[in-house]
Image (spheres, rainbow, N blue to C red):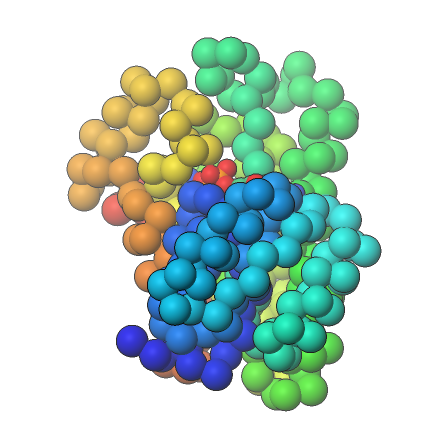
Amino acid sequence: MSSHAGHVALITGAGRGIGRAIADAHAAAGARVAYVDYEPALAEEAAAAARERGCEAIALSADVADDEAVGLACRRAAEALGTIDILVNNAGISPKSGADGRRAQAWEMSPAEWRRVLDVNLTGAFNCMQAVVPGMREIGRGRIVSLSSVAGKTYCDIVGVHYAASKAALIGFTKHLAGELGPYGITINAVAPGRIDTPLVRGTAPEANEAARLATPLRRLGSPEDVANTCLFLTSDASGFVTGQVCDVAGGWLLT
Ligand SMILES: NC(=O)c1ccc[n+]([C@@H]2O[C@H](COP(=O)([O-])OP(=O)(O)OC[C@H]3O[C@@H](n4cnc5c(N)ncnc54)[C@H](O)[C@@H]3O)[C@@H](O)[C@H]2O)c1
């Protein structure tokens, strides 16, 4: 499939989990892809595997919360691959407090922990958007997708309030920017995954994952590929009249 041939995609948190599946899906669809991750070794390994499959891919290391590092990574990606016209804000964290995988309780959460989650999950998306929008405006085409969560729309007992607030804020970010960016040919949407089987979720108590599976009408956890396929549609030419939307990828779990 070459639905994305000629396009340049930058995916954050692309070293593993959902981000890697999104980056791999874009590479397989013909895009030139920058795999960006906080962990250089993860990004290198993922991009090298894509190159072995014949795809055009580079690895870049950046903390999305650091606006200078993000600016540098985006400049390097554009120099190596061309103007970035697809951005997927996937990098995100969901810290747990206890060794038992229990979520952080709001009343025992440190201000530093609150700030770090907001800095990565929300400000990270803002930093990346600022770095790529000038190029997208120049070429008159852009696709931005951010990873929200069903936990940003309703109560979810395995995440902390910092995570829920950051994912809810990404929905406002998406809707506001749809208005600002639309006149320049740039669409922006969000996906809201349910429980997806990734290293992040494997840190959760197995009983909680089993309860989520049973509460999901489709009776399974999602796969990273389920999320990647939805992102691939939202970054394609086929979704050109879709903007400001939040698409649940949750098997019907926590319908809101
Ligand atoms: N797994 C789920 O069930 C689920 C559900 C809803 C939403 N999400 C969201 O999907 C996204 C991906 O989740 P996942 O389960 O694949 O997570 P994960 O922890 O398995 O992978 C996250 C990746 O992001 C990277 N990363 C973390 N902080 C970073 C930073 N500051 N800068 C750059 N890279 C950073 C990590 O190194 C890692 O490679 C997150 O935004 C998460 O909140 C996940």
